[in-house]
Image (cartoon, rainbow, N blue to C red; front, top):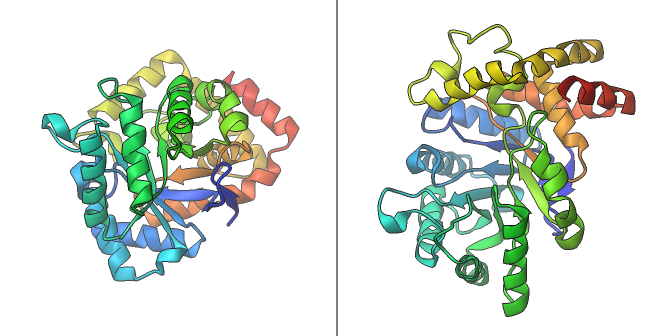
Length: 320
């Protein structure tokens, strides 16, 4: 396993990490969840990503029970939560001081840990001043309940404002951002955030490196009968697939197939390796519904050296 600094911080995070979105507490049973975490940890993964909004908190409960049972030394792993969608009442949503702090306490209880290594603002909140959110995060850092805080899917301008507030009032600024990044979604990480890496040393913990499954190639000839697209509650995923058919994204995926074949690697490994090739990426969050799938994606580290300038140019041409 390769380890990278989280932005300019001193924290070492595995280049590949493991997340529980749409799987824990929903798509997979607890036994498979445990097997995936163990396989990831044994492969050198040290960051496990979660959020209060995943399966209505059940995802964190499942992960917490597994961490408790496995008994790993706390210094050997990083665990995160995200705050925004905590319930259906007015103060259970958003980034107010009340919800940020209460959601942190609830996540600590569900995950059965004393502190969160990483705590993300899951989305920007137009109804809460950024200063209020920065102050709430600073409080949690000062109390030792959060070590590093960051954002997810915030604009570059919003991240800059958070840094300006922190600088003016001597508060703790955000360390990292969790954006979507893959071969079909590149603009924010590569262009919009470009100046943030040099100005603030922004770290990135990217999600959806395989574009919610599109870059696995399994949808190239339609939706397989055993696909999670057919799982109850995944209507949004089916809509995304149908849109990908009409907007040409699936054609781009098909154009990548011969490149992966020439390299002798799987299409998912190629997609993840391409993300790792970007030095601005601190870690790539993998998701999996079975151990074999996870192990295949972990092999992406072996693919990175094969991505020569010529291959990268072929990839760019395929998805242009």
